[in-house]
Image (cartoon, rainbow, N blue to C red; front, side):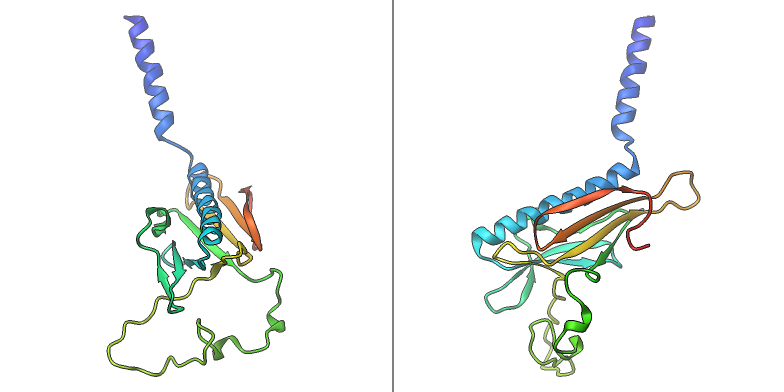
Length: 191
């Protein structure tokens, strides 16, 4: 009887630990998933000579993969489950940083607001019928040459009213894959 009791307790302990993972580890899995999928998307873009992109919606905690159509319009990728939109679960957030990277804002030839996402003169005030507005352009471009827009994406978990420590993971890209994942960090990179 005692042996059965000990075996039951041991099995319960193993099952409990397998399903109650640390939030920091969950956050790392989310960051690592995006790292791997962007690396795979870069390979796909090179092999198929396609322009891809990643749209980051910080407010809704989602990211979606996009492709440039033959009409030079950005469209969400819907036919491949690997590139389906991902929403971070409730305690997790991310912050995209495209500044402080290899280029400077003062080096621009034109004002960013003058042109729209397709680099034509901005005509956002013109309405023609009941057209669906195009999806927003991606902030991260994955070129058919294998290059990726330099970026820094901070995944963060900041607990409120608990004894848990905050966790930060930073996904960095400097032009070419592979992407670099840093963490867990004790404080955010933007401090």
